[in-house]
Amino acid sequence: MRRQRVTVRLGVLTVTCLLVVGCTNVLVVASARPTAAFAAPATVVSPSPSLLAPTPVATASAWPDRPQGATESASLVRVVDGDTIRAVVDGVERRIRYIGMDTPESVAPGTPVEPFSLEASAENQRLLLGGELILERDISEVDRFGRLLRYIWIRRPTGEHTLVNLELILRGYAQVATYPPDVRYAHVFLAAQREAREASRGLWAP
Image 1 (tube, helix red, strand yellow):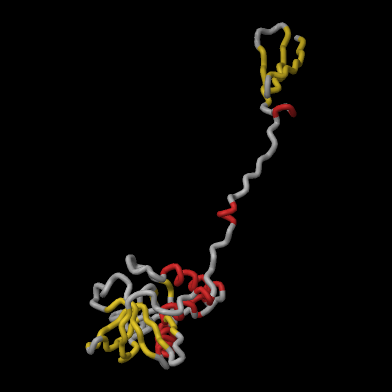
Image 2 (cartoon, one colour):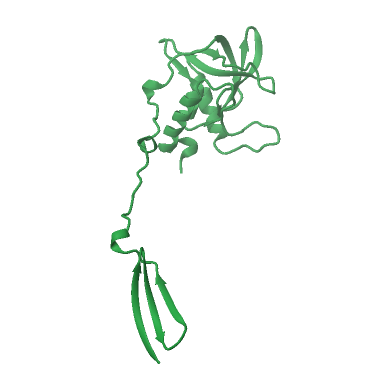
């Protein structure tokens, strides 16, 4: 019995036929190797420029340097923890919760003192010294616990303003916690948190 191998090119397929002469069967083996004429070049797709551009990080010159909304003066009574104070507003002592940020718990009932909470409380108190306490409103007046929701500013005798919420985030004592509709400084707080994290400050230290 005599065998004969025949190779046939059909389009992109190279077909090898093994003919067994004298038999009715034909064994066909197809190879899916494209010929050089049909081989497609490799294509590399680059991301669009917008995907490659880094997210802008605000610099110190971009931080707000004075209140942007309605304000009221207050007299500090005491610091409760890293994100809450008690102050006299319009002759009434109120509990005030900082907007847009959260610090580790140190006084929550039934909750153990969390790491870095005492440091955050001490830094909060240090920032509140040496100036006039100013409260800035956003949209909401109070939270579900009846606490006033405010951005906390200190106006120094030189006229310089310090946004305490921002400073606590920037120094790594607090994390951003945004609750719409109170988002006036959300983009600024997020930029400050990125800076603190990249610099390994406070909560972001190894």
